[in-house]
Length: 198
Image (cartoon, rainbow, N blue to C red; front, side, top):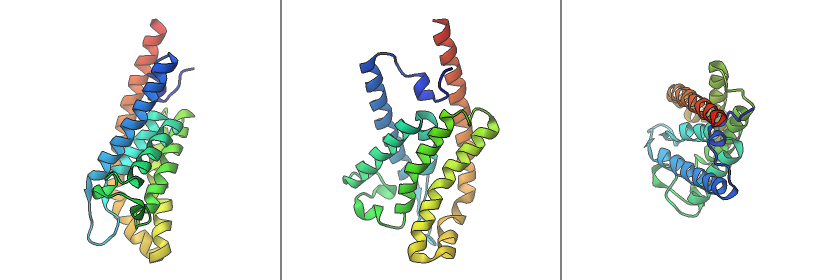
């Protein structure tokens, strides 16, 4: 039975080409996450900006799987810690990781791994399954992000400032993610069928 993860379906067979392919995907998706972080809208009433980052993180897990996806997000975080301006609004450095959005950044690692794992286990094979997986992936960073904010703001204020304002935007991101994953599933099915023929 073929893998439900698009990156695995399209992976070349030779050892060297497969390694180059994996490294390219990991590097490419870390760049995608960095670019999505730059689509950032600061809100005057909260220290957490609206970004496309969660959308990119969830798709990274869904399209690359748990291991490659986790490697891509860890590379992204390493780039930011090394001083590259990959965090939201072109920020970088360890101080940013300790700032108000640090908990969300840490949560991205868990989110990408969870989404990748659930896709690998074929839980995203149906529309409702994909919806569940992608909603879960969007919610995971809130667990660590709101907990991080709550340490300095208190739970009620952390939920009000770090969760509630983003629900409508996340609903749109989930809908777009479902569409992208459906397209990836169709592409994966066609690629699998082609491999069987040849």
